Every structure is written in C-alpha cells, then in structure tokens.
Image 1 (tube, one colour):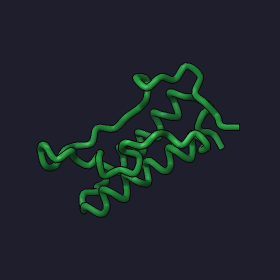
Image 2 (tube, rainbow, N blue to C red; image 1 turned 180 degrees about the vertical axis):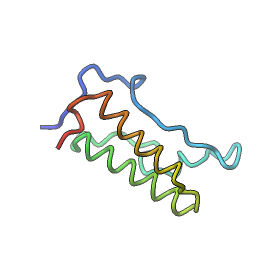
Image 3 (spheres, rainbow, N blue to C red; image 1 turned 135 degrees about the vertical axis):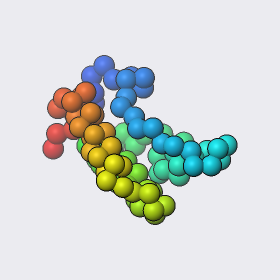
Image 4 (cartoon, helix red, strand yellow; image 1 turned 90 degrees about the vertical axis):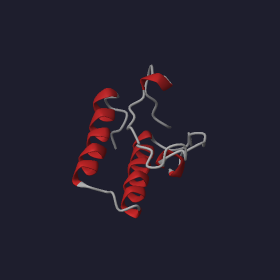
Length: 91
C-alpha cells in the first residue's frame, strides 16, 4: 500500500526555488525529470523524494554549480518534508 500524507494539498507542499540562469528560457525546472509529468502514485513518498533530490543533485553537478550551499539546501528540503509530514517518509 502506498503511504499518503493526510491532509496534503498542492499548496502545502515543500518546494525549492530553482533560479533561471537565462531569463525567459524556462530555467532548470524544465530540465528536471518530473517537470510536466503526473506523479507516479505506485511509488512510496520516500522513493519520490529521494528520486527528486537525486535528480536535482545530478542536474546541478552536470552544470557545474553543485556547491556545499546547494548540498545543504537539498538536505534541508528533505528535513523540511520529514518534519512537515511526520511518518510519511519512513522506511
């Protein structure tokens, strides 16, 4: 059975701001695996969070802009999700 966050709505989700290196070009968000895709509801929330964070890490590494600050931001993103949705991201 897939775990769900009780009371979750789209406007309550934890997000990370992705800058647009070239104004008007859509920025890095459009380069993520999940951009424009419907969620895969067969996956556990923990799997989705891990996949999204790995995708961002890879994107920033490929573009040569993955810094310690970005690493801390992604770690914070995981912590914020775990604290906002207690129990949802457990193994």
